[in-house]
Image (cartoon, rainbow, N blue to C red; front, side, top):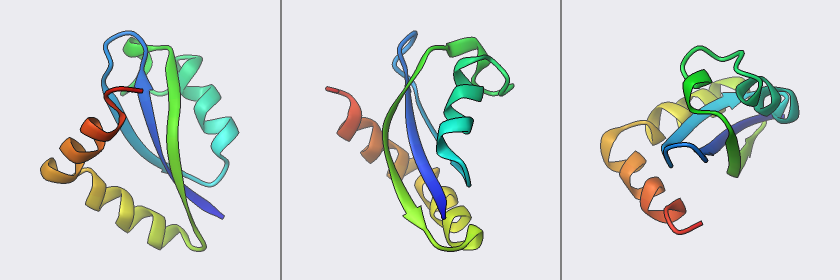
Length: 81
């Protein structure tokens, strides 16, 4: 399985969207500061994820969700949580 996941920074409330094959390991890497784009905003909280059978499907969904309008919709969805 492949995952598209949504993380929220507990430091500045920013939303991060990513994709991976092993969700547990990837979240640990984010929170340990091993991901360059997120290390300055640790800790991160998993807000949700979507499952896909292929890496290609997950990547397409990730890119779609990173578009301006879709990311804003996700931010609004997870803002109160």
